[in-house]
Length: 204
Image (cartoon, rainbow, N blue to C red):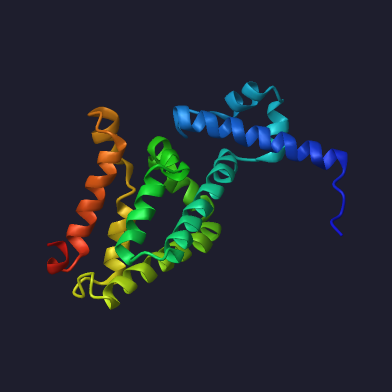
């Protein structure tokens, strides 16, 4: 039997959700560097002390916003692995899903500050990132076994190259500045990936 949540605890959870929702909105609008704890407290109408009771540091608050998005990325990897399609289609699915996903949108605004956040939560992040890489390795190894991907390329190299496709600089330049349609950017990104990792005969 699930224990009942007290009214006080329920109010605390609701307030925390309000804080996280507003913080996410501001982070997506302005980025990590330009959002202050004072601004968040004022925006949701709570005392600064109340905000700090929930999240003692700005990094704590931002990590609480980011963590579900990292988990979502991991979930996408697991979904890709489970597809009945081949390894190429699985990677294409993952690119499509995550280049339009919440984690990438956060990286677009606050990617340059992620090192600070990751350093503060290194232990927690190291529980998620290896699982993401492990799932990508499985897909890449499947492609090698089936003779689709270049056997000369180490899986570790290919997986790192794949993750680097989510580095936001190129997206900003092409989509934000030059107004390239997102679907075109994703298609070009997929082409670039597969021209690099496919066996040459498979690209014909």
